[in-house]
Image (tube, rainbow, N blue to C red; front, top):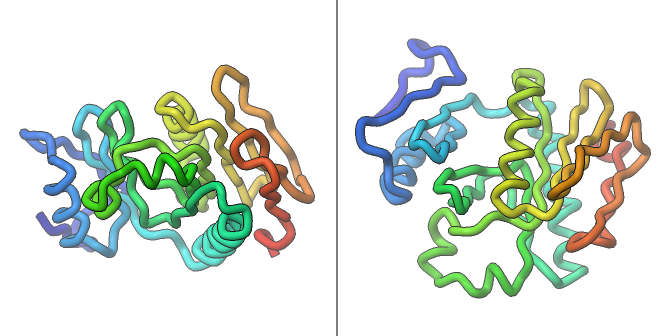
Length: 198
């Protein structure tokens, strides 16, 4: 199935008569590679436009900082915004940046690693773009936590705020932080916000 971007308003939600398997979803994503696609647990497909250039620049920095830290730290593996994960509830989600404990990643088969890895990242970062709905992004953060993420950060450039999500805790809001410190599984990771927002 291909979309004509000039004929359809995005974001778009639709539910196929028969839910797409991971393999069918991968083929759909490959045929529509200009779009960002996710799948809800109920089989509904969410099709979104790519990020704008400014958001993309910030996202690249966040991903680079996480990957550099992960490589030095050695306890886990970092992923960029193109990496989809099949979560325990059957949904497929992609975070703007994600990190998985190495032992969990290495327990997957090569085929599982090639597809949408059947696990929830231990740590996720979502970056709000101007077109993103804040309530929807906050709901996505809760979804990550409900599916097993141990910590998540929602970065809102416009509000100069970062919300920290953890299981069984209320989100913690940080307004105009100079940096955000990792805890738990990502203790030692620091995101210096001036390097992201500049």
